[in-house]
Length: 360
Ligand SMILES: NC(=O)c1ccc[n+]([C@@H]2O[C@H](COP(=O)([O-])OP(=O)(O)OC[C@H]3O[C@@H](n4cnc5c(N)ncnc54)[C@H](OP(=O)(O)O)[C@@H]3O)[C@@H](O)[C@H]2O)c1
Picture 1 (cartoon, rainbow, N blue to C red):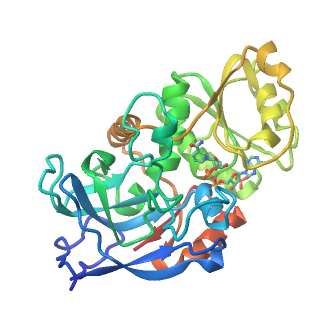
Picture 2: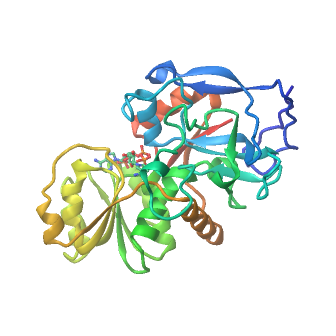
């Protein structure tokens, strides 16, 4: 039998680590076939950590746009099933394998997104170890999971489990885009698109680095919130369809130094117009469809860099910066474990601002 510790929304007041016996089981959601309504709540055996693994009891997870694609079948229509979805979780270590040196019971950790991307460049082999998109690297929408001790990182001390669960994909992607690929410097100008998970972290990191932020959104209400978070300039891309022209007006026709491009082919033409000659566009997402003219890329000597999440070493660097600066992730709304369908539909609606979180 398992004795569950009382749950707390602050994340710091959990009781003693849970007691586990061999014949215990846990709740997990599986994708037996594609579709939000098909998600199946099931019982699974509690994983037993091998010598180099730690057993994590998850307290929270967060949603990424990718999770919606995985569940609905647009991420990989040939994905093997059943599979447990979601890549981003946070919890506490409740058991360690015999050879584990880095961690002990009670440590608060998050599994890294690509389980075998520790540092250096990404590779096909590293990318294939991403969580939550198939049975081989199962996701975190389960109460417990066993992970290699090298494939988890410590939660910054000031963050709750709910806040920490927002970091493994969206935050590291924004960090990679600006701090690593962008080499962002104080005084530079950053353009962010929309107010989803990645973009809101990009706003926060850009302000942390002392940059000027021009942020867009399709909602005036969200624009007010962007302003209250410190965005210097804002543009509603629905009422100002030529938002690239607005960016040029705001930068004295020079253009921005960095664009955090989450829109994809439908926004890239305007992003290319809005970036300065020699500027940097971090290509992250594909929320929209459209076409663009590649001539602008070379005529403006733009550095167009594809970004795929980030490594463990980037995650550790980012966590240090988050700790020193006391950064708190922007949580839009918290859903219960069994409300995963509602949470995914909330993501689908696009009405969120920042991160949608699941509390276990
Ligand atoms: N490459 C990677 O490693 C990586 C990592 C994470 C995410 N991604 C990708 O990045 C994209 C964003 O992910 P996310 O998790 O942050 O998504 P999300 O939280 O679902 O964000 C969606 C938001 O994007 C904004 N948006 C939609 N259409 C837009 C448009 N035409 N112009 C500007 N903004 C628009 C909307 O904000 P408003 O309501 O404010 O308009 C919407 O709320 C997705 O394509 C995702 O797959 C890639």
